[in-house]
Every structure is written in structure tokens, then in C-alpha cells.
Image (cartoon, rainbow, N blue to C red; front, top):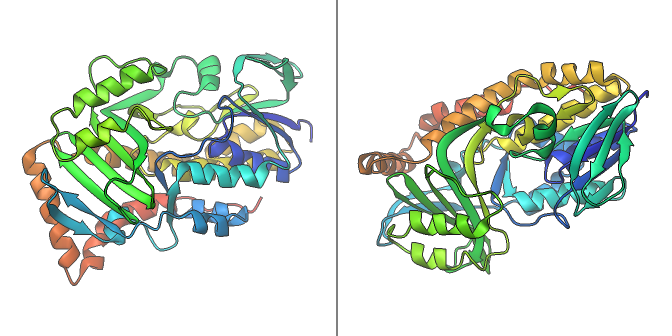
Length: 398
């Protein structure tokens, strides 16, 4: 290979998945991650269609099955806690047979464990400058000595630092839905056993679910304010969430009171990333850094896994020649990404009912659908676009 050393920025899903395949194909791989260790926790994520095949090809199928949330179902509830509609696992997850769901941190740990013996991980550091040279990319780190790599890949998420340095400010590429999302871990107040509770009010949603006896996850979704707090100002973010749900009713005050003590508070806008081109010179992007479908889309993890598989495969096929591999990567996976981005936008923007009437209609629909003897037939038009997008690519055998 003419080029063999690759630096990947980001150790969540796309980064370790890419590292796995690149190492398997003979590249020397380094992953830099600003967190001091692999990040646990996080919200639950779906893995659908061909992305499950990627995990099987990595030998991770058993670990993924063991990490499954195994959610049995859930309930839409009123402000008094009264069940309005009970949903089984087919309705609560809208997943096809063979698809699965797990906590993001569990999947990240599985991918890290699959690569840690073969890949150099630099935790507690980040890239501060990228300088392309004739023989590679000179990388300046925040803490470590500068190094030169043949290629650099940004797998560092919605707010990608690599993308910002090479492609410009995120305002050029990020498309907002107008909603915010907040997720964190709480004690299992409601003794939920692989069960979800969903409490909707106009423009707002509170979701609580548990996959562990002692803890649960709470998610708040609400309209974005005119001015967003700084991404590093957690105290301001938490004040914003408290204000948005101060008079929401049900048990929201109790849920909000646990926010300050949570070890894994997450807060961000519900946004998409769309770029016309995912590479420039010796630097390319993968996963949310290049094509984030939004945190509420249910598609991003699958897109990251498939994108990483194809990018590594094209680099192998081109013997490390990035000028061939990078365009082929986008050409090969582009239609799959576009279809999932479109579906992701629809899913995210329709998730929250904006009026009391919309909430009543949604609740009535799910209540009736669950009781229909032909429920499978009724679900087909809902599942068809999800399944089509999840399988909108034939994976090559690189």
C-alpha cells in the first residue's frame, strides 16, 4: 500500500468500526478521543438492516445480542399517570426481525473491545491543527507531540472538529429541526422492567425507559429557544431544560431534580448534517460528522457502521490511494445515506405532536392499532420506508 497510517478522530461508533476494518486490511490505525476513556451510558440506538450484517462480519453479533435492551413494550400516559395506550415491542421500536436496539455506550464498548488489542487509542486528547503536506497530514494535538499520518478521518460526530478545520463552520452544513433533546441516567424511580413510559404534551415529550433494575434513562424533547447556551455550559443547558418543563405535570419535577447528579448528561439540538462532498485532500469524514440524520432519527448508528465498512473497503480496494478511495466511498454509499437522511428528517420532525388534538389522534391510533387482528398488515406502510432505507445498499465483499 502506498499509504498505511491512518488517524481517526472519535471513539464512539464510526471511529472504532472504521479502525476495525482498516486494521484487518493492513493499515496502521490510531484513534484519538477527547474523553479520558470509552464513554459509557447514552441513549438507546437502533441497528437496522445491512448494519446488522456489518456487525456480524465483525464477529460482534453475540456481544450485540447480549447488550440488547430487550424492551418489552411501553405506555403512553396522561398527566396523572393514567395509561392512555399500551404498546408492544413491535410498535414501541418499529424494528424488523433481525434488527436490534442497545445503549450507545454498550455498542461503543463492544467496538472498542474488538479493536483495543490492535489499534492505538489516544484518550484524553484532541486535534488542534491539521496541515496537509506532500507526504501526509501533520497533526498537532492538544497534549501530545505532533505526528504525521498518511490519512486523517473525522469520526467525531455532529460537532466535528475535523470538519470544522477542513470544511468550515458547522453553520454551513447543519440543518436544525427546531427541537432540542436531553438525555441522562436517573435512579429507576418507577421500577421499570425493560419498559418505557411516554408522556406527551404539546410540543414536548418526556420519555423514561429502563434496561437495568437500578437505573433508567430519561429523555426530554422540546422546542429550541431563540438563543442556545454554549455547548460546554452544562449548567446553562440544565437551566434551560428545567424552564422548558417547569409546569409540565406528571412526575417531571422528580425527573428534573435528578438531573444535576447524573453522570452522563447529554444535551443538543436535533439537527442534520449534509455535505456535498465528504473528503478534501487526505482528510475524509464518516458517520455523523459527514451525514448525521439527527439524534431522534433512529438511523444514525446504522449509517455510521455501514459508512465505516464501505470507507475501509474502498481504501483496501484502492491500495490506500485516497484520491481513488474517497470518491468511490461516497459514490458507493451515497444513495443509501441520502435515503436514510430523508427518512431521518421525517422521523425527527414527526416525533413530537404540536397540539392537544394531535396527541389525542396519535394516542387513539396506537390504541386501536394494537387491538387490530390485522395489525401486521396495518404496520406494513409504516415499516416499509424504514426497511427500505435500512437495506438500501448491497454490501460488497471487500
